[in-house]
Image (cartoon, rainbow, N blue to C red; front, top):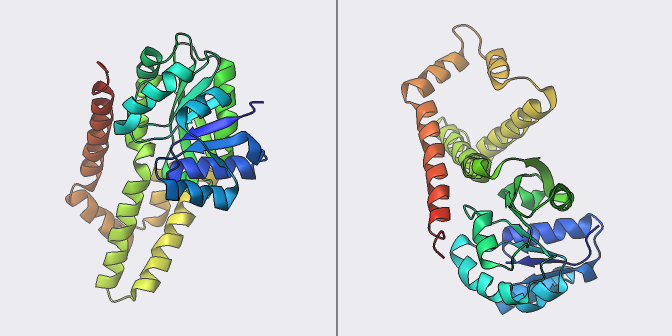
Length: 271
C-alpha cells in the first residue's frame, strides 16, 4: 500500500478524491494537497485536517502525485514538479486530454505515469474513472491507482488511445444527463406542474432508470421497449425525439467532445 499521497489542485475533483481517501481509511497525516488560493487551502485544512503544501514539497514527500489541475495550468506545474520528483514516484494525471507522453517528456526519465479520466459524480462517491498506463507504468502501478480510485466509484482499464473517447463519453457524460433532466423539468412546467414536483418526478425517474440499467444487466433497448406500449404515450414521444434528430445530435455532440479532447492534447505536443 502506498503511504503519502499528494493531490495537486484542490478543486471539486481534488477535494472529492482526498475526502474519499480519508473516508476509505487513509490517515489524514498521509494526505496533502496544493492550492493556489490561500482561502481555499485554509478551508480544506479546517474541514478535513489535510496539509496544504507547495508543489516542490509535495514532490519530495509523496509516494503518489495526483495531478488535478486544469489542462491550461499544466505547464507551470510541471516546471515546479520536475526538478523535485524522484524516479520512483507514481504520477497520476486527472487532466482531460493530456497524454502520458507529455509528462514523460517533462519529468525525470523513468517516472511512471497513469492517465485517468474521472467524472464529477466522484463528489458523491459514484465516479466512473478510466485508467491507462504510460510507457513506464506497470500492472502494479495500475493496481495502486485502481485501489485509490475505487473509494470514489468504479474503475476500468483502457488503452490510452481510447482516452479521448472516454473523455467525450463518461468524462463529459454527466453534463449530457443534466442537460436532458433540465429540459424534462422545463417540459413538466410547460405541462402545468409546479417546478418542485417536476424536479422530484424527473430526478427520481433518472435515478431509478440508471439503477435498473446497473442492476438488471438488460440492454437499454430492452428496458425502453418494456415501457413502450403499442400506440401508447411513450412511442409517440419516441417518434418526436427521432423526428427532431435527438439521437444524431447526441452522436455529433460526443464526437465534438472527443475532437476537443484530442485538440487539448495536441496543444502540448511541442511543450
